Image 1 (cartoon, rainbow, N blue to C red):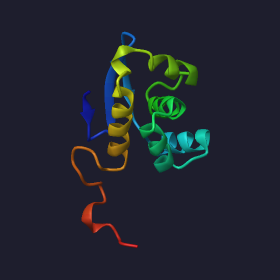
Image 2: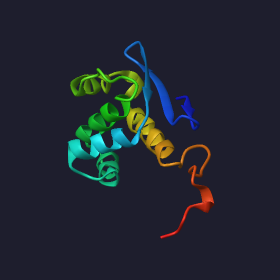
Image 3: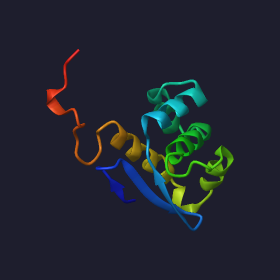
Amino acid sequence: MPANPETGVVSFEASGEAYRLQFSIDAICTLEDLLDKSVAEIGVQMARGRIGAIRASLWAGLREHHPKLPLKDAGELLKDPALKGGKATEYIGQALKLAFGDGDGGASDAGDDAPQA
């Protein structure tokens, strides 16, 4: 699973196609609106194996680079061997970590200079 901490993109292949998974602010908002839960609550649901949460997260994260992909097709992708055995949640988790600045670099762009609340 090639992940690019510079762009926040996680790339993978499924069903003979290349896909790019990225959680922009819009993607995260779309996901939260779709499931009426915070991204943290959705993460808990995915960890518990809730397929609906996994499908919605995959779809939302793919929309940035695959805007015409319907939600139903994201569900079909989950049948692919490349995304079975926890791979889908692994890819989603990596992309979310990159979105929140917790990817391979460890720190967000704000770094230690960010104002403290």
